[in-house]
Image (cartoon, rainbow, N blue to C red):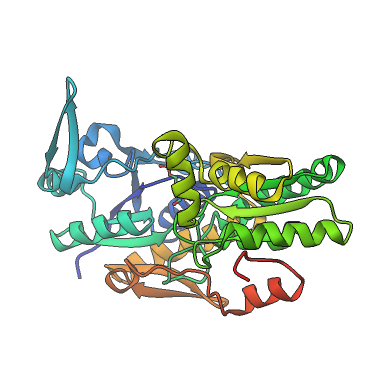
Length: 363
Ligand code: F6P
């Protein structure tokens, strides 16, 4: 087994609270436990296409970054070296720069690379591994929809932010007797909407995994009204499937679905028409991805960072760290990618929500 002296670390895809905590833990473990040198690869894999961007990380570089959101390495979700888009005076061309990456990784002396990212980033890592760059993966997404790990860091922080927003929305919703739609992130899965809705006491939760109708939501709002509850809070995942009739109505009114309109606004408008109530929509967006990670995310990120370097030391290449129950485990990246973990409509969490009277717009 050849000796490991120098490793690289990079963050790819969208950022998320806890990335810096992973970087800090990995750098500290590499230097203090294994005496490795660590190269910080800038802006996803870009730092291996242009290696002059990358530089040695010292203990000093990671000092004080535990509570910081974002990533000190920078990131991009447009940096796939196998299909790199270059824009030349408005003309976009796509190039395979993976050979450059492998050549530059060798030139930098990297014996292994820690790839922190979601599905897309891990897939690129695997393709680079197939070309001879040993990689280990650390899963990341605030959406918590990777099947390989029970939880991803960043999710807890995002839920805190969304819950806090729902808490704040409560008082104003109640004062004005309004329906308030809070649109949260979750491109394919409803985990943030479900957890924040439960934690914040939302009355309706709309998620991609449970098809809903506006009629059902409006009749629930009406029932609440009859029982003296004149306001309703809806926690809505951005990835919900917009009901056909809503889309048709929108197209007949505007000619097409207006560009840039959020799903929350589309649904909010339909609810306003169907319920005869005043509706306001709050789109939380990237607020959920920014800022300081929660204690739980800092701890999970630190565990992941340490485990990733331990994995390198054990030559566990093409594997990814994952949380299963209380334990950290190593799983094959190839097995882990491409398998989404959605909310189970029949699962315990949805059952708990239904038991406390939360409506999913499906009955
Ligand atoms: O996958 C994480 C996520 O935050 C999704 O919830 C959201 O749809 C998407 O990324 C936003 O991506 P971007 O930052 O590129 O707009």
